[in-house]
Image (cartoon, rainbow, N blue to C red; front, side, top):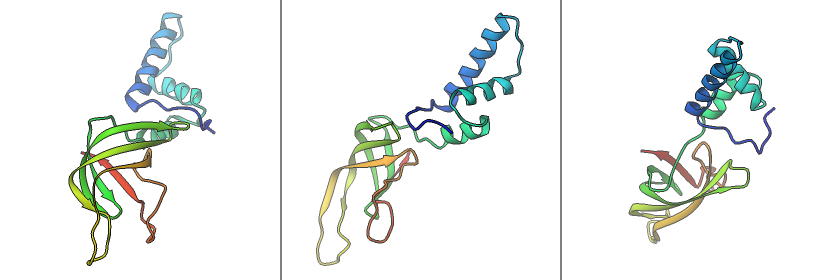
Length: 145
């Protein structure tokens, strides 16, 4: 099983690694198929096969400061710009600072409102926060636009 501290490269980079491996081995007189090179790359990351690595790498959302995103914050829809991002721990979670295009009312009561235009929250590679609202929904869900 993959070590928790291992950071998986994006799919494009994993495929490029396999291509470089094939070229290096060919230069040394060893010919392997592209699929065999992909399997070898997967083993380097400590997973069973290429399909497993592909699934793990493909499920990771790649975001950068300045990216446009949409989603839900405390159950309310939003569109925003990422103003700050920090990788946490082993890189499996990120702390995002979002600047909403329009303020979001974070209170669900009809008789009271509290608007936020800039918030900070933590998300995993799937774009969802581990913290949940009282109804079991993630506090923050982010999707690239």
